[in-house]
Length: 370
Image (cartoon, rainbow, N blue to C red):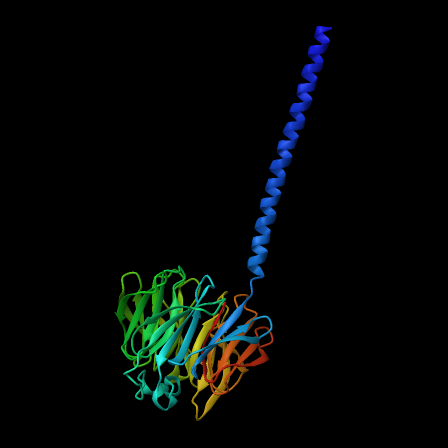
């Protein structure tokens, strides 16, 4: 009888152990499933995060546009100067833009690209700034005094610095992206204007409108390390995601210069009249050049260049004075500011047709996507 009781006790303990083990596994499985679901939800939330694009309007405002509806949903008014270029930080939280001192007779330097990078009517008594706003709330974060006639502003991909070209001073301000203090000023070529930074955040490639060169700036060591000759009046640059190929709009030659950074060999692709900004889509397949022309004889096209064949595969008609250009991260849409119409053209990247035209502030210049 004692033996039978012992057998029953052992059996009961074994069953209980199996049940508890099963419960433990079930808890672990449920926990794992919950973690997976949370990760999926986080990813879904990130994918569903609202997207916007911003334009810097030289008439005195920044327009915020919903990328889903293509409607202006907010406007930052500026009374102190002229917004010229705008960019969103890599994490999408901050909008930075250059605020140049007001120019006499409302004369824009982009309307006078034959001035070789200098604005003869600049009011030098006023101060210029890099402005930083919260991308979601539109609240001012910081106002940073920089050099004379700031042109373009770009964040490094690693989030450490923000660089601004000071067109009148022939230098670049390097700003700490955490405390918004100017940590260095780097001398470059004459009339520095548009630029982009390599994806590894090591180098900035600055187009010097007052000469025929691109300055290569070592960001960490705060110095210009070389110049690359590309042609007459380069306006801005772009770089492929592998950091191997540089492109620059050569305004004085109506061309896009394509530079192999390993050999510094330069090839030129004819584009429209008066090319201004250029943007390379994320998979490096196409580059888009906005052809501005002049105010007296405006251009209204965007040249779409195949980066492999180095040929224009489409000339897309936009509004007058096509200037700023950006491509959505999924490469579905191209957005172009039309300076002489106060509009943005939304281009379908498959059909190469404008599908929407949006009224923004007067003289929209730079444009950036979040």
